[in-house]
Length: 393
Image 1 (cartoon, rainbow, N blue to C red):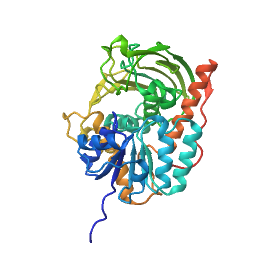
Image 2: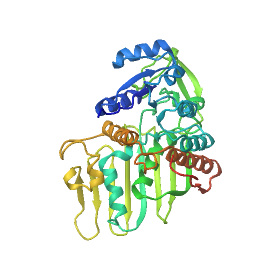
Image 3: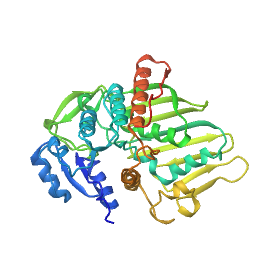
Image 4: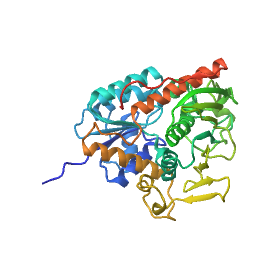
């Protein structure tokens, strides 16, 4: 009996994250039907650079191609909702970068459409897929640390430290009203809610804009490009309304308290995500810059350091380890593991089964959380975070 052909992917957007999607798909043997860019000329050039066979002249042309089964959206935030909705309407499965939408009204609509469509829709909160993050989740769930008391940490970067640093994320029309919190803070918040198995119920947020006016380079700037060096004649003043940093207090379901510092202006911190979960019996801590170890804190015996070794991990975490112990795994591997779970689910064909990847409902939950954070930053008060209504999208 011949096997059904594998789903074919479409890459939409080839900035920072689009090529990372492509690399993960190639590692998994998922065929790529083609790519879409902002115009046909850019698409043709990017297809040559990335070794992709086909460049579609438009998004509409790509959606009309029956060879495309899954749409990977790696476009600016403001395009996520309309592009995801169009993909679902065309009968395509979707993997969307975060945030799912520009507003919670849009994300609620997308989650509802995804549930009604009979299709598979995911948001790429890939950082859940570090093996030792999954290990932390498994250990919390089986009671190893006792009752979680405190959840605290930070997500720090420095790529917007200077007033000459610029990127489309600084433009509300493209990136949305929130920036540091929506861009990286939501990764931390999703990760700790996942690791603890507890929803964030209320927030208190203090936002800060260190550069209310930046000097914007004339012409486009890619994410994470080198800072400085642009001539004064090539810069123009540009007001900034979104936050460079945030300090956030959290209340979790079940009574745990938490805190988070988010920053894109912390010199020397290139991409540092750290969290610690302190429980009634022990603690655990993880650092994205040392992702292959999990610190275990104890009161009456020596602290421990669990290394990423499939033979030492719980079965759920071991399944995310592509290599034996001592072989380091990092950021790119999390995307591959996320996509492996997604495509395995699509190919199995039972869309009523539980989904082991972040769904559009998870994306909507993060938008509701962002709404609460923004409201709190403006009011200076605690704000409750409403739960998502409905089933898994």
